[in-house]
Image (cartoon, rainbow, N blue to C red; front, top):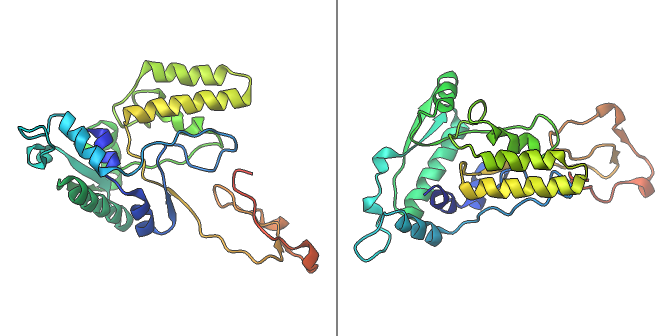
Length: 244
């Protein structure tokens, strides 16, 4: 059922609505960690979503998906109060209505109340969450689910997943470690404890004669190294990828 709700979200349309974000299908952010074989995650597939809900028991006598049999009163989307969060909630509500025929109620809460509410798993269905890594490594994202409490407010915890993370961090080969972490991420995405939505981005414009200014994951620029280059032969003719 969780997978069905994920497949029913058009994340590209959500990204257009939010403007300065990019759609996210896996859990770790895309194009940030060089040579990390990020799993693809699930795309937009409302017909598959309906089939999954039918498999979950929400079907008519002919075996076809029947939205009227889904208990919408038992599911809601809870978020902490802000205009941006409300906008996202309303887009999700509209997409689930359009793609699944389900009207999911929205519930907003003050931030401090919301945090304890989510951490205790008292929400019904879905609760908003966001995460910024503590350091530049996929493990800083995947480690959220390594313990059943703390930052993990999903209620999902799997000993096999923890063992996969541990095996990755025991590897002394950097690329092999990345591959093992990606395998763990794929395992977690298959269980679908979260519905990835988007990664925040920054619109970046720079004149070619401005040197020392490059895109980076946190948009933190070392201004003391930024300067104007008078020689056109030394101007930037492109920008490196963030992962470079």
